[in-house]
Image 1 (cartoon, helix red, strand yellow):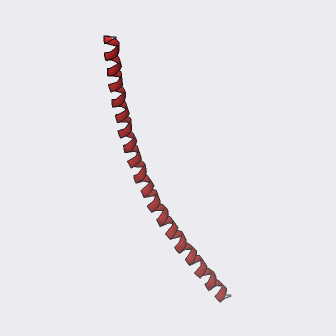
Image 2 (cartoon, helix red, strand yellow; image 1 turned 90 degrees about the horizontal axis):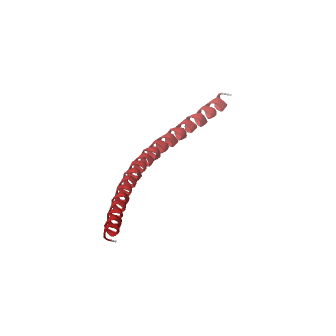
Image 3 (cartoon, helix red, strand yellow; image 1 turned 180 degrees about the vertical axis):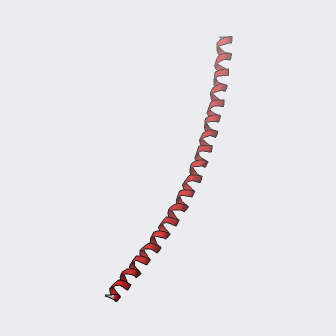
Length: 69
């Protein structure tokens, strides 16, 4: 009986250790994903700003054409 309890305790301790490792990996992955998300949001803002500038430039060209046309 005592041997069974000791074995079960060993199994539980091992399961707790593995669970702790998984939690650590998940926290690291979560932090990495948050960094990636911030980077992608920054890139998206930059691209949107570039597109807005291009559209404004096109609009200026169109206005110039219609005024001389």
